[in-house]
Every structure is written in C-alpha cells, then in structure tokens.
Image (cartoon, rainbow, N blue to C red; front, side, top):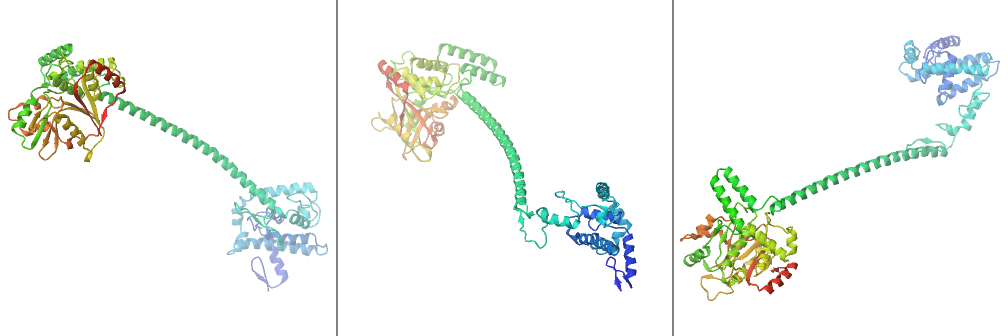
Length: 578
C-alpha cells in the first residue's frame, strides 16, 4: 500500500499513485508562503523564485529543480515528472502545513477567491517580468528545463551578474554577498554583531557601524530638534518671567504710590486744604445731618474768620482751672496717693472740627504756651503774646525755618505748613520754642527699659524733673515747672504732673487733646470723683509704645544763646536715654 504525502490517501500500486498525483497537479495551486492562487504551475514556480527567494525553506525545492533542469537527457522525462510531482508536493504540503487542521482547504475555490484580490498585483508584476525576460533572453522556444525555458539565465539581485546555471548563482550569492544576507550560511562560523541601540543582528562589523551611524544621526537630529524646542521653551520662559517681573514691579509701584498717598493724607500733605477748609467742610456736614442749625454755622464761620485774621485762638476748645481743681482733690481725697507733683498752671485745649485727626501737636503746643504765658519767668521772651490759632502756629514754624532752624526738617515738609494738615512733632515744637527764646531740650527714650515693653526710665525722669525743686514732703507739690510735651508714634500729649502711690508705683497725669471739653469740665466740680481722674492717670502699663520723646522747658534764652542753638539745630541731635 502506498500513501500520498499530500493528502494522505492510500493506493495499491505505483501507477495508481502517479495518476493520483496528476490529479493533484491539475488542481488549483496555492503559494505556501503568501497564499497566491489562480496561476499556472510555471507561474507559481516563477513567483516563488522571485518573491520568496530568500526563504530557506525552499532551498530543497530549488536544489531538486536545478537537479532536474541540468540532469541527463536520457532520464529527462521521468525526472521532469518526478520534479513536477515534488514541486507540487512541496507547494501543497507547505499549504497543508500552514493549515494543519484541514489541508485540503488551500485547494478550494473559496480560498482562491479570498486571496485573489490581495495578491493580484504580485501576479501581474510576475507576468510582466516573465514576458520582459522572454523578450530579452530570446529563449522562449528553447527546449530544456523549467528555468531555462521560462526564465533564462539567472541574474544576481545584488550586483547584476548573470550566471549560466542557478546553482552557480546560488553559490555566487552565498559566497560573494553573504554579508548582505539577514541569516548567515549554515555550517559557517561567521561572528554575529548585535546593535547596542536596537538589538538588530548584523553579520558584518562594517554594516553594524553604518547601522549605528544611522542611529547616531537620528539621535543628533532629535537632539537638534530638542535644542530648538528647548531654545523656544527658554525664550518663552524668559518672556513669561519678564512679564511677571513687569507685573510685579507695576504692582509694587502701585502699592508704593498708594502707601505714599496714604501717608500724605495721614500727615496732611495731600493738598486737600488746611484748618480753614476742614472746619468749613465739617460744619457743612453737621448742617446737612441736622446737628447744626444754619444760623450756628454762619456764627461759627464768622468767629473762625476773625480768629484767623488776628492769629489768636478763639478759646472755644479751652478748659481752664484744672490744676487748681486737682490740687483740691489731692488735698481732700486720694487716700491711696502718698505724694503728687503738679506743673504750673496750664489750660487744656482739645481738637476741633478744623484739626480733628491731625492737630494734636498744635494743641499740645497751645497747652505748653498757655502755661508759659502765665509764668513771670517768661515775660521777657513772650511779651505781648497770646495763644495763637493753628494757622498762626504753622506760620510761626515757617518763620523759624526761614531763620535757619532745622533745615532738614523743613525740607521734609517742603518748607510749607500753612494751608496743609501736616503733623508736627517734638522737633517742630523745639525749634518753635527756641525761636521764641524759650530754653528747652529733647529727650529720646528710644527703647523699652522695663518688662513687657514698659518705660520705667521715662517715669523716673519725669519724677526727677518735677521733684527737683520741692522742699519738705507735702502731699501735694505745686511746682513752677512748665508741663512736658510727650510724643510717641501717631500722637502727642502733655504731662502736667506725676503721682506716687503708697505702694511705690508711679502714675503720670496727662492732658490729652483728644479728650473733649465736656469730659475735662467734670474735673472742675467741687466733689471730684476718682473715676473722673481715670482719663488723666496713666500707669506704666498704659505707656508701652516702642519709643517716646519729650520736650522739657528749662527757662529763657538770651539772644546770643538763641543764635548758638540755631546753629546747633542745623545738625539736630537729641539726648537719648538710656
């Protein structure tokens, strides 16, 4: 029994097997590599030779074909039949090997139709190439083997060399162009080279070098593109940073302008008018709110204009007689006080509608000057003076600047106070008193000298100031010392005395220009309550600002001393404690 290697069918004799194989040859042929069908046997052989030349699985078929093609003429017929059988067997078995479950499916019409369209282009090109080869070789009528009859002499696909036999061509390709093949020859110890970048296996070092150079060129190109992209990114980042810096500077400039304008408003340098304008504006507001009749508005306006014309305060914010009232109170009450020292007689002045929010320095100067005007020791230097109004005080400070006092402070205020709401402090009070030939000096308590930010040295200095001329130890000491101008950040007040309690603690007695007259007049009652003095008493715990300055009056100056102090004020210094 004989078994067919293609389909597995068994027959009883060799003639039956040949007939069976002829049936296979007459059936439709399918390419075992790409499933091409619908072509003749010769065309299929040409397709396999050209399209699948490098497939190692066809080497046996090529060897068998070459053997038959170049065999002897005596056995030509049998060998040709045998070769056809073997080729068909290889083709069909290759198809069966690709479809092990059903080998006969590769021969059906459905399979042919399925692959006909996909491979029609290869078939057309194969047929065109066949005709061109037939025309060029002129061997279409030559009898012989399949290759000699159909294709002519084989040509090397790498260098174009033509060999007489395909066997010679195969030897030429494997020996001359072995380095160009993807898979090295069998039984060859040629070394393999792996690409370190992609893992490709090369059989020649020079090919590997060229291949790696391509990688490097590609990387260099990518790096160049990356550098271009990086340069663009850096430029964009630089532009964004510049824009951010510009916005930041613009915002900082805007904030600085707002802060400067705020300070100008706070210190009365915003050109919004001075005492007169604010007084009229606030009185108009009171009238509009119904808290001031129009007749009162016109009366006050007339009084203000008269006061400004003569330069003397109208006295509407003044409260007199408080020192005397305090003397009576401490004599008859205040059992917890061991001793108290009071300044010379002084009047209290509080802020009005015209200077509310900025006039504390001017009001404290009025208090200090009211005491000096009632002290005979200062009649010579203050002869014929009265307590000036605020615009007059501003004019007097400007005159002191013109004389040469404190040029640095004058420049800070643009050498102008009249018509503004500019604040004044200890320096302006000092030069004003000095220009009036009143001897005084500034003491700077520039840092805390006690626990929790207190200033015990300040209290001690004021106690020594008032107690230096006391004789004996009466409970109430009315000194001839003028009050003390007390300045701290944002506000100023007037110290009119100091009391020492039985437990040893000290309390300053202070006039605040922010306290209205109705509150101060409560101290003028015969039976003054201790709660009424709460607004005057300030303990160490109540004075915890970072820095304090005081202006203390010491007497009168001669004209020569005034000139000397004017020269000293050009480089202004203050006594610092501690």
